[in-house]
Length: 202
Image (cartoon, rainbow, N blue to C red):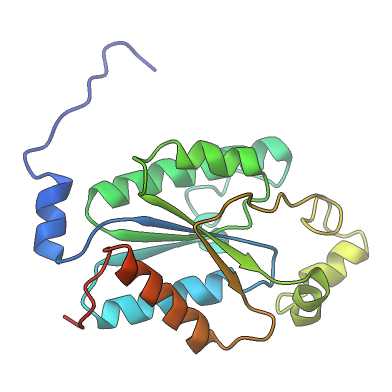
């Protein structure tokens, strides 16, 4: 980075934005295997938060690769760069007073921890969406597991590439036998307990 680039401090601060929004800004980082329910939960939670008057935005793995990260593949190096970009983008959204939600497999623990390091303590909430591989594979909405098993998709997490299970996620959501509604209720309760959102609907 050039030495001639200087960060400009804005007069409209994150604290002022949060006060206007009537909720705190945080990043909820959904991680888990393909088919575990990351995107489903992130978007369902966003809908519930929106109904409560919160300002939100979901960074969905597939959507981001249509634009911001369209030049990246799925090698270890490209996955790391993908997560780096998302972490930096999400950091800006949190500064804007938004509750940002990311739904990425993000299989490499080091990459997730590097993203966590971009945020002040408590602003990065890792949500481990836990679901057995066989259940994820049975869902296979996009047909990706079948292609991976047939050798059509290399470096596929859970099949030909590893997934580092989070050591100490702030939240673990098990989706094997739970309804979406039950999972969202748990997430909302956790956000209320952490003081991110008010206990009453705005």
